[in-house]
Length: 301
Image 1 (spheres, rainbow, N blue to C red):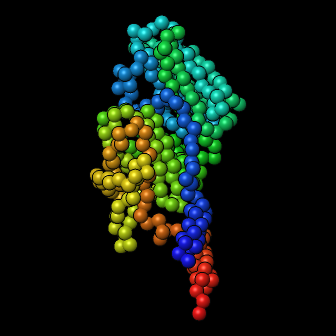
Image 2: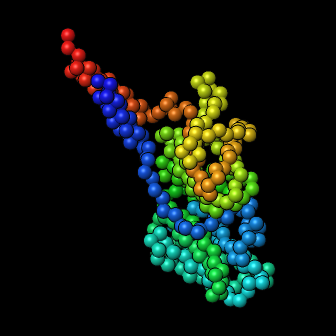
Image 3: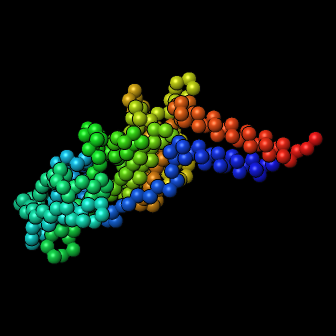
């Protein structure tokens, strides 16, 4: 009887999680070698690489002007900089040729309103100078123009695509090291933020969690702890401060270059919507009915 009860519990739990929108098989295409430079790290990257490039945001719609800036070390002047942009399926959408100024800086703009920019997804921007191996790659994402244009995040924020179809910006700051790319998801049903980071030699990261999108409260209305995991493992964090609009949490960065942080509000159950709550009640009722049926089938009086 216990065996059948556990099977029923597992099936009901799986159904509930599916209805709540929880996914365990999310895979995301990534650009190998792409680097997204945070605004506060630009000078450091200029020192590390002979050629660098960055955009003024990470998320755009199909009616945007992308401002691109770059730097080629003056001693590397041998030819103009060639910039190539490819769309999510690898087709070239534009080619630009730029001549840096005497200080090595250069800039240009990309207009996403053209017919070659209609696909949603990840676009790769690669720049190269001369025939030598002096190249640098970054990426940006185009989303549906129905998203609010104000929801474009800076390079010191992680763009989190939410279940309501909008982009929300999660500010972050690291101690030591370099961040090469970020990505995020926000699930309002489960009150969960998932933040992916790639970087080098990072010691710790501090996230600013806006209360309007995620919070954690006790039954009395006081602040309570978040549930936090790093690469799937429960982890502790330090709450640096909190105010009426945000909470700031500091986490150690794992020894690996890639990290996935999951931050869960602890007041998920009381805030279930009416439909979700009904689904949960139906699932629990199903467990009880199956359990009673199994019990009656095995126990004879």
